[in-house]
Image 1 (tube, rainbow, N blue to C red):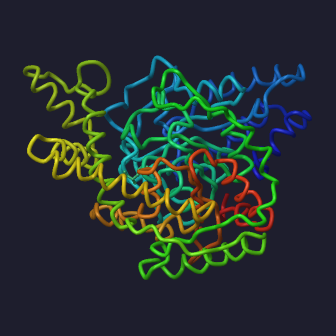
Image 2: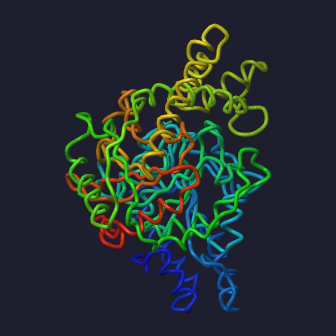
Length: 483
Ligand code: GLN
């Protein structure tokens, strides 16, 4: 069963080839057998899952149901779920069960999806390797001594290892696309505002966006159909109709103009990555696309800009964790100040503290103009680069990550080296654009992801291009040994 895509599982469920309960049991058994080593789940919600599967079966039995009724899914542990712990990968929220569901969770639940559990992630989504998680690192299913990427590393590893047909993720600077690339799956970061952030624990609110992580573009389209849409509880959610993303998958890509930014293909690009990426672009050319070189001149400013903007927003968002209302509280505080200091000091890990310190610094009275305001200006320049480029071409392609999965521990003592892992993904969040990563080959036996970036609300086009590519390649069907 676990070799089937989500679309295939949905039709098998509709045809009653097996029940949702059987399917859910199958995945729960795989999780039980394989997850201990992989560590891709923080919580497995067995009881809830079986209850939801039974309810889905009753709906399917009556011939009703949506396109995903009875399909098991996993949620990144950043999405609030009633009745099941939401830790955000942090000791701070190790004791936290939300009183409400995130909009993404409730939409998928209403559509009949079954929640298998909550996936591991970097603490508060800060990281590119899943090593900052309070619950320990996740292994990459392709090589157990390698990272799965981050911060949605648990979701990516679980989908790649077939412990769930698909999962949700969030992307503030690459956290859907980079782990998707490193684990050989398909991950889509939608346009900012397309998917509600309500109940998605905030890291950097002007950048955060939830999206689907699945094996194929078709599966991602099925999920996005349900996840996307206006939500009055998220003030940055966009009131724009959601098309049926599955309807445009088959469209011809004849004449689509693909831009290759020269800044993405310079000497910094690992040759192991360049070879499969160039081969993938040739494949798009064979499918009728036109390739041309473009320039995104401010690319090199993206990482420094992001590492001012994101920490600034995080320092503000994370001020709510102070030991007084919910989350971790230190033992026997002497007074209020001691309660704040020790609850935060003991509850947050080192990367989160580093970001809070940087954020507080760049927002402080004496440095605001020099850092935060400057970064806002650079953010505009980066957006304008894309705006200009997207008048010349329809989409932009390049690698998702500059290297394949690196070794566990390889960059964990060097924050700047870690930050550079997101060099091709961060600029897209700064501009608020949609982008996806699809499996496009291997380098030293490790998956390589191709990134496709489009204009605002062009998710249909991105999924269409990805689907057409997946019809003529089989990288997305490869399974890591042992799974
Ligand atoms: N790796 C980036 C960071 O550490 C992006 C994380 C994300 O997208 N959530 O901030």
